[in-house]
Amino acid sequence: MKHYKITGGNLLSGEISVHGSKNAALPILAATVINNGKSIIHNCPNLSDVRNMLEILNLLGCRAEFVGRDVIVDSSGFSPKDIPYDIMKQTRSSSLFAGALLARGKRALISGSGGCCIGRRPIDLHLRAFGEMGADIIPTGDGILCVADCLRGSKIILDFPSVGATENIMIAASLTPSTTVIYNAAKEPEIVNLADYLRSVGVIIKGDGTGEIHIKGTCTPKDGEVEVVGDRIVAATYLTAVACSGGSIKIKSIDPGHLSSVIASYRKMGMSIGVDGDEIEVSRQTRLVNLPNIITSPYPGFPTDCQPLIVAAMTTSYGIGIVNERIFENRLGHCERLRRMGANIETTGRCAVVRGVYSLSGADVSSCDLRCGAALVCAALGAKGESVVSNISYIDRGYENLCDSLKILGAKIERIELNE
Ligand code: UD1
Image 1 (cartoon, helix red, strand yellow):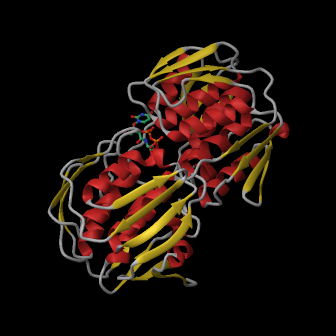
Image 2 (cartoon, rainbow, N blue to C red):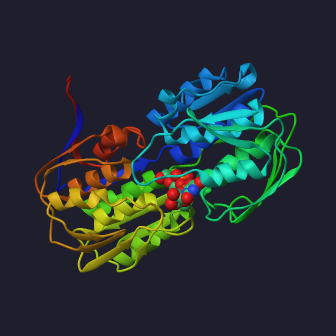
């Protein structure tokens, strides 16, 4: 059993660098399958989801390993295979292999994908796009089988700018010489990072970062290389830690532009936030004031991944905060846990109404998903007394050593691992 023991009340200070983005690294790793040679992924975070992706790559004959902070993948030995259900369900991003397997191996069986229980997470948009690109989509007892001798370039209009579907289509299109256009594409920084990798192997991509992406694939991919961008959600977690506990810190290795909606919201709440190059300086000197209109939406809107974080910050801020979760239907599990710490939060459907209390009290709380866990840690840093945050394997999926990083900033936090 693993948990964090946190004693709240210390002001945070000092400097911290954020690691590479999980949500950018995972689709890039899936995309390395299309390459017939070597790929070097710099600044790859060493997280359980990343290690699961390496396991899948090795199973597919693509030799993948960490060398320091880089992952090196040699995909020349690729042999097409169905990913076994047991391995696929360990990480939600395993579904991102579908585009790559279809493009290079002509067949992909999607037998289920794991991850956090924050909503249904359907893949109908991915499948419809594969169908429009010429794949046969066949439901089977083992999962959904996608088969295509040869994918064709096509014009795909997404009903919703799904990040996963945009990534899967980009990867699927990268070995197809005719052009694929994605309309209503996702604009997240992770999409741009994936496009950077695909360009490095010879795919021609235009419009990434906008709602219309053009992809002209290559028949002869070459060795590729990319640097994973700093993790904007990890940076937002440090911002939230300061919002909850007070103090003043510098966050390094992050593009502040990737966090503009989060920075704008925290500034409105009263935090002092300065940006300079790839650094963010943040401090909280007085009690923050709640906002009545946080609505999660696709990038550049307020990120769903930061919604549990800002709810944690709102619990002790002045006045009434209102948060609407518009991306996932089941992403307010942290509210019930924060109530155990003394927060005053009412939830109706996807909406949370937070009435700020003067302070939270330490309690035993259990993470119900990755960002719920991070939100509970932040809340505990500002609470009176001791908290125990359990189920932290969720947190390990998205943060390299959150405990040591927060200790560097002066937090009183211990990671306890007991043998069962
Ligand atoms: C989502 C987030 C992404 C975040 C990631 C990890 C958005 C738009 N996406 O990406 O920023 O980093 O979680 O937490 O905020 N949907 C369908 N059919 C599909 C695909 C998606 O209906 O085929 C729906 C989903 O149910 C959900 C919404 O679209 O309501 C967003 O899904 P999508 O962007 O695909 O999710 P992720 O790729 O997981």
